[in-house]
Image (cartoon, rainbow, N blue to C red; front, side):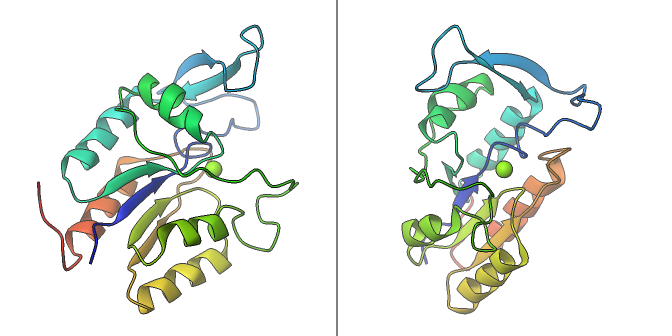
Length: 181
Ligand SMILES: [Mg+2]
């Protein structure tokens, strides 16, 4: 069995959704970034927790998973967001740009069909705040078919917490082919 991928979402995971009053966690730092296709005088404000970089590096250094961005930030995850957290340039899933008005156009996460094809039969742990019951059923089905699949779903108002990543490493270390780097 191949080493599992660690698929990483950004919005609702590394960038928390604001509370009803518009506030973001005190742990997060404000950055203005200019995504691809936007002009420099029209930046996007994002809030990032510097601790997330350290926590993700701890996971990466275990050598248990192959980290890949899986986010509508696409290449900007690699070139803009990752570096703000002190992460090396990680590969990214080049997601399509469907014309959709909901993240679940067919009742499940819009990224999933593309991810399913991208993964083939590789094991994967996928961190995203936006899975539905159909996604969890998909993960169970993949696992039953021999491609272990774990979905980790942070609350988008709080984002990623250490226990989510503890879940990732515990799961990966228990796979038959797990090797500690
Ligand atoms: Mg998200």
